[in-house]
Length: 230
Image 1: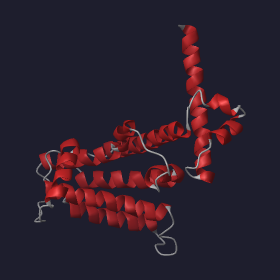
Image 2: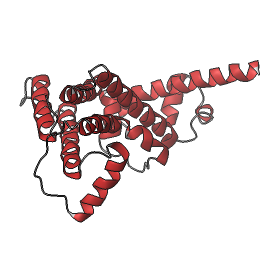
Image 3: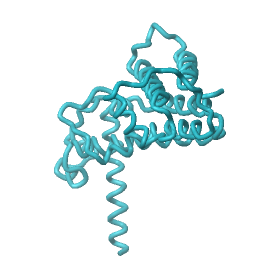
Image 4: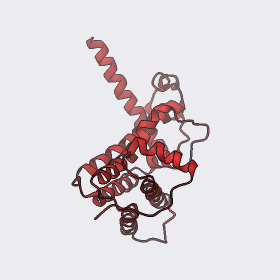
């Protein structure tokens, strides 16, 4: 039993080391990871790395899961630090945590929100990690709806095809929220990541010289658009 425990610990440590080297390669090579290159940096023969990650896609999946979970954890902690009934402030904390994490981990952000990796198909087990951050948004919306704090709006109902999509999303993250309000929230969510992506990928350079202030202004506007009080 003890030997098994030692082997498991050694394997976990080696797996973490492989992923850390792979993250460094993301900075120089993007998602064009090479298991041979990672093995070379580790000082191991290329065949040895396949005992930990049978293919490049398995390594990419591990990195993607780590990135989604790191972002989700950051969002959860940021929102938990704000009073539960400060709904707009919780949204701002969520938005700011996404931006802060992306700035600190630009290559991992690019892996999950940048261009798709050619030939890579994410497996189903990435879904739970992938929706972790938006589930935080759902929690804010749900709490605001249950408190009767969401401002009503007279937006037209989405067309039938979109309404079915919204209903599926609503059932998962915020069942008490009206479809039109959820549509606004998802639009704000897209705006959030659009703002972050423009900053991370350089589209705001020489245009917006104070990106943090601009981001805060835009996210406060999105809080009003969603209908969050405060």
